[in-house]
Image 1 (cartoon, rainbow, N blue to C red):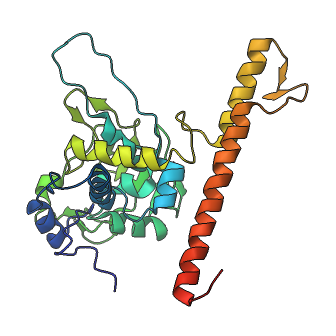
Image 2 (cartoon, helix red, strand yellow):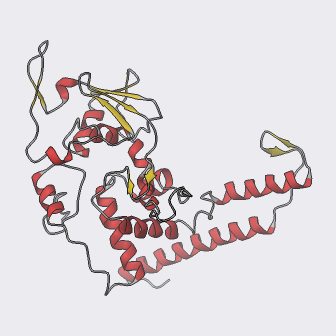
Image 3 (cartoon, helix red, strand yellow):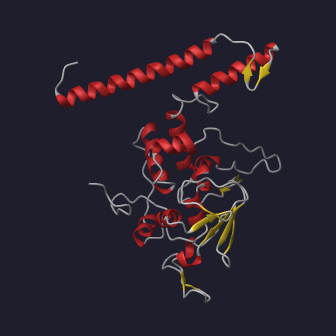
Length: 299
């Protein structure tokens, strides 16, 4: 049986102001990594951070749509003794562009699940248009509007001024990130830019230290390496980029991102597709072996 979201035994932090979730976050103790292998440390960090940052997003969706192995670097020559910014937390920066994330970060909902419900019910507008898709990625400068009568904290009758009634234990969490500009008089939010990492701190709210995010980033970067190259592109994209760069170096003509003359696949193309083929065959063989084991079949 699946455990509840706010399980007191698992104690996984969620994006919510629920009293049980706040209890789990308040009594959260960092796990002891002294008796764990490096992979176990990465997996535990991944479990903890992903439970908070978009637990409703599946692993496949996160890897394909939101995870980018290329993180920005900062070269600050003004203060040599200043600590390097914790850029690993920016692994979850693309999640902050989701519509339900913006609604929750703007303090219009007590949880990410309530924000998702508002979007599905059509109570959220993006640039004046109704969008019932919580996974919609907003762009810089987009204006997000929420129906005031759909906000739980605002009480009153239609046509009259609504009273703000905060939820219990929510005062420490009533803050707005720097990449959002919220107007509570009109219940509107402007998404200014993507979250960035500053020296000594980051703009993405998270209850975990930067070391946790670094381990989680290494977990996804390692698991993503068999499908993507270091550049963060798929096999076909990498081969196409390599082919275009070689053509440009040789002085060949390029028309609409394609060569005017056909080219022969390079050794890098053959290696890439061979690795992908061997990985697919290995996964298929492991699945057949597991299936035959439980069905007592001999293949």
